[in-house]
Amino acid sequence: MSKHHEELTGPAARAAALEALMKEKGLVTDEFIDAVVETYSEKVGPRNGARVVAKAWVDAAYLERLLANGKDAIAELGFEGPEGDVVAVCNTDDVHNVVVCTLCSCYPWTVLGLPPAWYKSPEYRARMVREPLTLLAEMGCDVPDDVEVRVWDSSAEKRYLVVPQRPDGTDGLDEDKLADVVTRDSMIGVARL
Amino acid sequence: MNPEAPFDEPWQARLFALTQGVIENGAIDREEFRQGLIAAIGEAPERPYWESWLVAFESAAGARSANLDPSGA
Image 1 (cartoon, each protein chain N blue to C red):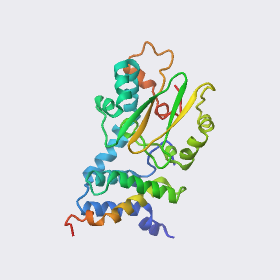
Image 2: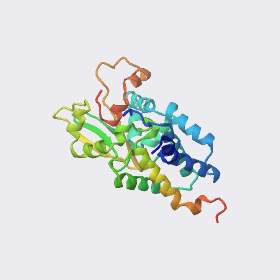
Image 3: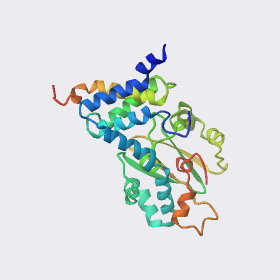
Image 4: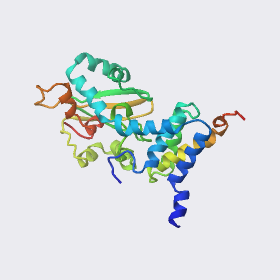
């Protein structure tokens, strides 16, 4: 197949044809598409989730609200999106939480941005349920033997955010500095801080 | 391909945004789209993720062609 022909029939061309059709029908505009692309490439990302976690670490009342109603507590910080509920799950000395979407790619966009490619891979989706300890170890996340691993399967209605444990040696840090400590992977549960 | 990036190519980001627009517009139902995405991933687990998304969107747009016509015809 020639390169030219591929360009006409490949996924990029099919997507462009759909986009042209939807614009013609008046269902979407270039301005909307450009704004969404910019939002998710530049504005929405794991820094939002890090702000939420840092606040939960320093403010017990906020943590309580986050656990009671994740979506509302996240909106308090100005982070709002089109998705359903966000359920915060806290790591403790006894429990390590990790999130997967076994059927597709549900993910808390508002606080983490869009999921990385590996989160959507068939391997991650299957193995995090079947053999979480092995997969976590392969990803460099060593969970102590006496810690229970809980795997949360996301859906459109319930998307999970892991609240990692606050690391030792961070007592003197303010909320901004604490947020810098929080990584995306720790909020998915494939890393520990 | 960068495993840490949500998109490999610009068309994927535009398709994502296009889908959000049509869903917000009400022409396609969010949960119906998700079920279509689950089906598209399930029928070809090794197909690249955004191509499955494209198949799901093509299918939803086709199924809703009546709703997608602003004249209502």
